[in-house]
Image 1 (tube, rainbow, N blue to C red):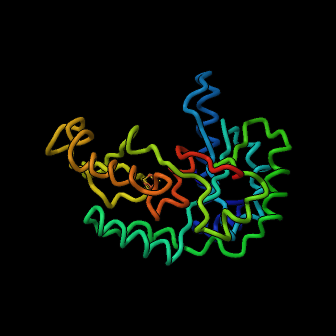
Image 2 (image 1 turned 180 degrees about the vertical axis):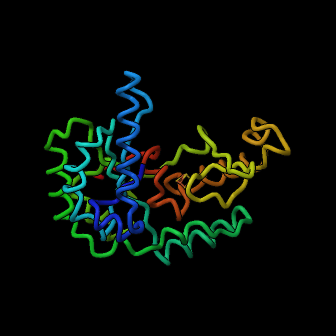
Amino acid sequence: MSLDAFQETNDAMRGKGSYDLVVKGFRAISREKKKQNSVYPVMGIVTTVTNRNYQDLARLAEAAREFNPDIHIFNLGTYTNDNIIAAQRRFMKEKLDTDIDCLAGYNTGYNNGIDGKRLRAILENLHGRDYGHPVITVPTLNPDKVHTYYADLETPVRNHCIVPWCQANINYNGDVHFCADYPDYILGNIKERPFTEIYNGDRANRFRKVIHACEGGMFPGCLRCYQNMLFGKKIWGY
Ligand code: SF4
């Protein structure tokens, strides 16, 4: 479940009452797990770090003790800018004959003004405490590079995305695409063709060939793609 911060900050971002609703859900599931003496369902909190909540992460981590989550993930977030979007638009049109819309949704500016040193100290403090459940930060990043991650979006921290060779996403309408967050390039639709045919088809292979030929094995728009953060190759020093 997504929680962005402790109550006031979370509600300012997600809407009044949203914090209490999530907490109520956690408590209800915890009660049921106890009653059934079960470890399932696994419950996790995902907190996306932005310039609106980064100073408030410790209070949320502390409050989360009481919900008994199985894990608390601090996601450094997906961000982009006008230059990256323009480069990706040109690239996708030229190489894959595709007009893209999705990447622009990450051009929020919520990365602007994050003090890397301050965030580094906050994260180090979080990781140094025992909350009774694992606390992880994704992607794992050299603490000295936290500032670069937010302030210099055009500097890659991961490359060589392997997603097109190991996974695919199926949309609610049956469309299949590789990139979970940027579903502009559609490989096919499972209502029309079997999944394996789509996954091994011409459009899928064309995408793989194009990305394979790119410098660093990634498109211009992949720079802070969350999947690249998880499945890409870590660049030395980051
Ligand atoms: S890194 Fe690029 S190719 Fe890989 S999933 Fe993200 S957007 Fe798609």
